[in-house]
Length: 639
Image (cartoon, rainbow, N blue to C red; front, side, top):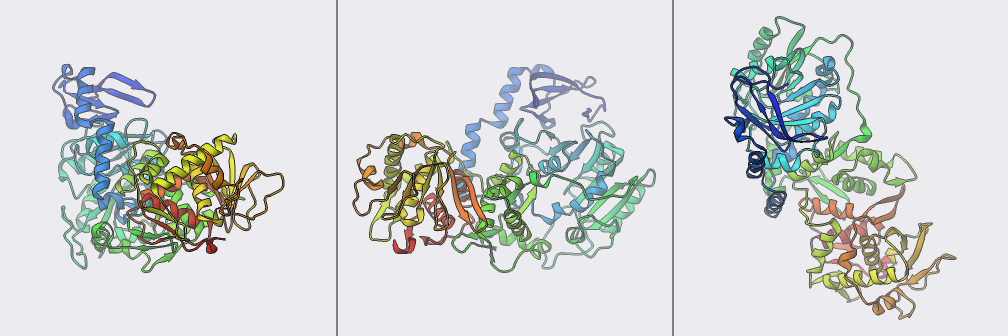
């Protein structure tokens, strides 16, 4: 699909390194003007053109890639610094929720009417990386080519390379760097769809508008979402920038460029599309009273247009950066003061979207809270539904409730696309090792109280790490191995909850028992409160607060602790009862999600109240992740 922007002839391709995901290193060479375009780590660099191929040897391109992208370690250091500063680029984090990006969705069925399998789709303004991933998910049978201006804005070269590099991004997505104020480096009619978001008012009409027409096939849709119109001004006023034209001027231009052929042009109100039906009615609104609009050139379909089909179960869900989350109350609320009031500033500029948000705090169920945490770490809707058994609709309903209040937004994203949005939303923790390895490393450095037992006794971070080391020795001394199941009556005493967290961190699977929960059928060891009767035929250990010699505390006291850090394992499962059934997930997923949302979780007193296994578990994990004390109200309240 590439062609020299000057000569209009196709390139020769020279490959230095290629894998099953495509060309990693090489270059495009124009046979007429001889200029050379580097391909570096799977990214096509029209912004770094070379004079001749002698400058594009394998060694030269490797050195160029290192200079432009840096190493994985240097990018990790950059991420760490970004996290420490609490920096969030609000529009990048807001992109999946932004009404200006979502207004195109009701038009996609019309735009796709003439798309064919293996067609190419051009995405002209992939500033944050999200639009390319979103289009690749929406059109899995087509190839998406996303453009960005160069080494600038929220990602730059190194962000695209390290977050959306080859083999990481969606398999049908390519990323090209080029100057959109110059002719586009593509053949005539190369694309079956052009998605020019936030572009037509941003770049010079010459050559940009004509180039979009040139590279689109004669029957292809060309979409120009998000245009700043002069039809009206925002109330209250804010400066929008870019070229502001009236809808009637776009209307006149569309009439001219569609005078020949089977396509028609339309001008729409952005607000009307966003608030309208799933499938937009094609009604021109060039004289809209709204100040943002959309222009579209659409094919005449050969049959009635219907909504696009897609695999909902495969969708992932991205988390809105606009909400505070209160774990203790299981409630969420829009918080304008978040991220140094960046949320409030953004909402002032998006009243159309703000009108869709809840005005007050919204209570969410425990299944919804679990669904939220699993969504943060990138589970698909299908996997979240499967987290509770027996199978029911409870998680589907819980997810829909979070989508309805705009806390979650579903999208067909690759794993890299989902991680990208966590990065933008300040929700991608930086770790040098595993999730739980970092969790316990944080705890190990705390000399102050982290667990108050409710009876005047407390444990520091060092004490907690000593506990896990002794438990590791004890369990392995009894012949248990990672992957074996334990059942623990964690509500009987805070130390048993600590044992449950420690055992799961060591790779064992743990069922948290409550009054109505039986032990797991594959249980190798039952840990419970003193004086409780064990199930017949099951090996059980009481906690041992009464001094019993054959008890958990007595055996831990006699165990010689090993280096527990060597046994920390992210694979351990934790299972607990919710109202609708047994829920199961990896403990590392809960820690990962809580650390990801640390900027959005309300500061609170972390209390063990014995209300539910999930609430007590999350109190410990969230509190200790922030090196804050977790307090049991009293031992009696946990019995």
